Image (cartoon, rainbow, N blue to C red):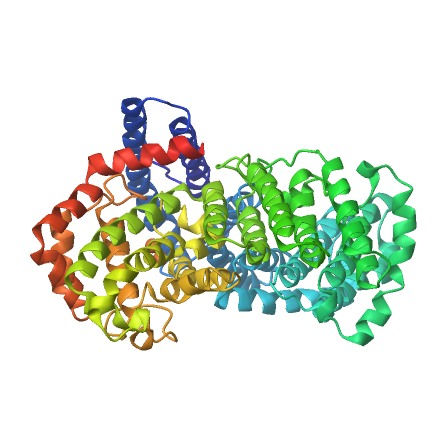
Length: 626
Ligand SMILES: [Fe+2]
Ligand SMILES: [Fe+2]
């Protein structure tokens, strides 16, 4: 048990590490008994750590976080150091840390300690930017605006520091926050290039103050500035079609120069973004044909073999020309080129499939437990968002989705397979006994015709269940939090996942049918609760499938005996009793009654969700995807 704040932070990190180790052991055995023993050990450990951490957070952190206990200098220092150290080394659990930084900046502001106040605001913004939607992000943006003001006041920062080291550290923090603001702009699905240029201009104001910095210090400041300048051009060319003509005119002339310089260098010394950016620009300006563009990009991509160190939490220190970066950078333009090829459709399909196979093979090598978690969540979500629209067949699209989920969230993959199997079992019986329930989905008037469409309905339900939680990939880091209670803020992020699932699925022509079902899976049957509130499940033509998914989704989550987190699964019967209690409000009463009355079906579901049923499936998935 940790007895002080610094202890708690240290202990928490050790515990995360222990859980990671067991997860790793799980992947390494071929023997079912051995594997089960390890899985149980993991569940026990998670439960034990959860209780400990919960108690410590309640006694050491929360009273201060929620203002129940006054903060004094000594505690503020311990919290500041603990939270700061934690934030720099692990960069996860941002929400908990972000709230702490808010509390600390208020304290330092009251005391008139400008330096510490600013540093807490910067840490807060950096943390909060990593989160994808919601109030925290809005607040982070406001803070970044506030911090940006300091770019005009470097004179002031210089005056209040009596040594160079403090001054430089303070400036670096301010720059770091603005860099994060830029990063956030660039990580939008449809980034606003003009706003990115604005951020770059804000950052560039520092050039006015060159005289305050030694050559060495300036080097550290200038390099990221140049990188961002390159990045702006690169992002502009990737979104060339959506730029205004005026912007195209301004940015266009900057490319050829960079290309000539770059082509003289061997591949490993080329700046990836300048090189790729120019090639794509050359295509858009009519200098290269799609085939030529593709060949150049592919040759370049194959020439890069530097490894990305996924165990370094500071992803921004990573080499820009790593295999991971080249995949996230060149795949989308390559796929665009294939689509623009002047050749028959089958050849395009084949070429795309080859490219996807290569990417999947690479993604499977990413260690499941690694340090740069948030970055990876965002990078993979973007990759998925960008690439999924190019996949022609839905089986392949689902395979790609699986591959993405496995890289960060084995538990979600297991959950979606379980949910799909439960849906399949109930649906089969429902179609046989109550075909009239499916008339709306199929647009039919005669119940007798429904049986003819059984295969289609099964496929629709099964695939929708397999994809329903894909949005969670963006917040795998929060979903994977196992040894402490999630904060309210973290729950509010989780509530966005049906919307993110919807957005991903809508990107692919074949997956669009599943999008609405995924969007509705957390709405209540009566439409009065659940999320997202804007979606009217009562009006959806897929309503019956949404209702079925909602039931099976809960059935799996609630009975999970191995525990996706600290909770031990409930018994199948108690879950059925809960369904009965909330039938008509939360759950579709007809489906609930149907399950309760149908003994054979009930036994199938009981067996699927039992410990033995799960052990088999989990083991199989672990073995398949390790
Ligand atoms: Fe969900
Ligand atoms: Fe789910």
